[in-house]
Each structure stands twice: as structure tokens, then as C-alpha cells.
Image 1: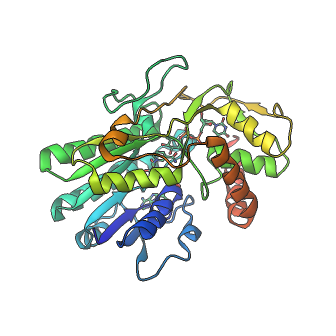
Image 2 (image 1 turned 180 degrees about the vertical axis):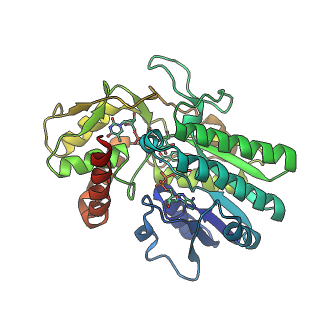
Amino acid sequence: MQNILVTGGAGFIGSNFVHHVVETTDARVTVLDKLTYASTEESLAGLPEDRVRLVVGDIADASVVDPLVEEADAVVHYAAESHNDNSLSDPAPFIVTNLVGTFTLLEAARRYDKRFHHVSTDEVYGDLELDDPKRFTEETPYNPSSPYSASKAGSDHLVRAWVRSFGVRATISNCSNNYGPWQHVEKFIPRQITEVIDGRKPRVYGDGLNVRDWIHTSDHSSAVLAILEKGRVGETYLIGADGERSNVDVVRAILRHFGRDADDIEWVTDRAGHDRRYAIESGKLRSELGWTPQFQDFEAGLADTIEWYQANEAWWRPAKAATEAAYAAKGQ
Ligand code: NAD
Ligand code: DAU
């Protein structure tokens, strides 16, 4: 594959994928990104100009999307509104970007017969009880809880329909919670790290026992590239790294890293419709495509991530101030 169009390539996970492609292949990359509040354009700095190009535009705009898809060999689709809390306070952009945007890209992939990979989330499956012995598999029924996860579930269904009805050469991946450098401070781990850096208490929703299945974003990127290169068209692959941790355990690990009392936590009102537990069984990806995660030790990956936020304060400070102002305006 010579030319890959990466939507949302200036975001947290998409930018990591662009670096991974540049480091491990000869392909050229075009990033299509609207540069919303969530984008991290700085994360693309230093990439070779003859291999990476940024086009600022909206995936829901066919006049922008069409020529870029036509000139690409493959599309890897990351662009989305991605934060559950925002989808609860204002669902509209989630419907436009995640549904209309995906539709617009699929129509272009159909028109120009391009390989398409759709990056999705484990949240489409709803949640598990804490003591459920099962984990999510590719066969788990869809049961999304929030406007965000419903919009992602809808986008997955669009991809499946375009494969079946129009023969679009698409694959889907559903990944668990990512962590690592360049993640927006609205998300759980960066929010708590930056609260603690500022001498405040981490803010934990509800009873803090909700479980997320953490994967380092680099491992997500290597999995997506493996699916793009070797995955079977029409198939879905779950991506996970066996990283289940409760929110309170993650927060205590962050507090301990800073030498703070592990119980110095601010307990806040629970998120509406808050999913209890996510857990991924990624055997299909591992056995079919030979993928394994490199970050086996979550605590070590978390320590690296904390150190990255300590060293990159100039990057996250403006976003932190903007996020706090937005939450204050909404009374959150
Ligand atoms: P992010 O919010 O950090 O980045 C999203 C990017 O998409 C931003 O650069 C933004 O500017 C861009 N974008 C938003 N609307 C756009 C539009 N209309 N047109 C063009 N670009 C637009 O999100 P992320 O955490 O990097 O997630 C990327 C993808 O991975 C999403 O599809 C998300 O559903 C999926 N995913 C995320 C996680 C996670 O833990 N963060 C886990 C599994 C799957
Ligand atoms: O599972 C994959 C999904 O993971 C992705 O599809 C989403 O794009 C991504 O945002 C993430 O969704 P979550 O809702 O799980 O992530 P978030 O970082 O918002 O919250 C993680 C957990 O931490 C969740 O149980 C809510 C809780 N939380 C979150 C915040 C921001 C808190 O307790 N306090 C907080 O301040």
C-alpha cells in the first residue's frame, strides 16, 4: 500500500498510527482532520514532509472527502467525536461526525473501490457485570449505552451494510480503552494525572469500581496496521491487551507515583448510564494475524505516561484550562 488516507490523524490515537506507519512501512500518509478541540497537531511535528501531508477538512463534506479517497490506496478511519461525557451534554456533533461522516467516507470508498478500515470501540457491546466470567468477543450482541457508543455502533452497522450490499472491501476493529502520550486531558487518565500535578485530588465518578481494559495506544496502532495488511475483508477484530483495572486502582497508582496518599480522592456524581465493565477477548486477532501487545505491564506504561505529561506541560495546559472553563460553564 503506497498511499494511506488517515481520517482523524491529528487526534490521540490517529497520530500514533501515522507515526507507526512512517516508522514501519514505506507508505505515504494523507491525514484528513477537522482539527477540533481534541486534535493534537503538534504530535505530527517532525514527520517527513515528503511522506505525511495534513489536509484540514470535515469527513462529512463529500467535496473534501471524494478526491482524497480517489487518490488513496486505502482509508483508515479514526475521525470521531470520542468523549462520552460530551455526548451526554451535546449529542448532535456525535451524530454528524460519527454517522454522517462515516457514511460519506463509505460512499467514496464504494465509488472508487478502496480498501477501508473502520476504527471502532468495545463500547458498542454495552457493558459487563464485574463478576461476569465472559469477556466481549466478535460475536457479542450490540447494546450501546451512551449517545457516543450508539453513534459508533451505528457507524459499525453502516460499514457492515456497505460490505454486504455494495462489496466495499472493509474491516472493523473494536478496541478497549487507550492510554499513552498525547491523550486529551478530558479523558480519565490524563485528567487525573494533571489534577495531581496541580496538587488537586483526582475526581472519580460513582463508587470507582467501574473497570476499563487498558491498552497502550502503540499496541492499538500495531493491531490496526496488521488488520489493514493481513485482515480478512468483511471481518471484525477485537483489540485488547488484558489490562482490566478498576478506576479507583488506576487513580491510586497515579497518586502513589507522586508520593501522595492513595485515598486522597474526590468522589463525584456518577456519569449517567455509566458502563460498569469492559473486557476484551482478543484471541481472533492474535491467532489469525499473529499480533501481540508490546506493553504487557500496565503499571510501567502508566508510569511512562505520567512522566510524559510531566515533561509536556506546555502542550496540555491550554486544553486543561479550556476544559475546566467548559465544565464550569456547564456546572460539571
Ligand atoms: P480524539 O478525540 O483524540 O481524536 C479524534 C480526531 O478526529 C481529532 O483529531 C479531531 O479533530 C478529528 N475529527 C473530529 N471530527 C472530525 C470531522 N468531522 N472531520 C474530520 N476530523 C474530525 O479521539 P481518539 O481517542 O484518538 O479516538 C480515535 C478513534 O478511535 C475514534 O473513532 C474512537 O471512537 C476510536 N477509539 C478510541 C478509543 C479510546 O480509548 N480513546 C478506544 C477505541 C476506539
Ligand atoms: O472503551 C473504549 C472507549 O474508551 C473509547 O471508545 C472512548 O473514545 C474513550 O473515551 C473511552 O471511553 P470511557 O468513557 O471508558 O473513557 P473515559 O476516559 O471518559 O473514562 C474512563 C473511566 O473513568 C470511566 O469509567 C469514567 C471514569 N471517569 C472519567 C473521568 C473523565 C472518572 O471516574 N472521572 C473522570 O473525571
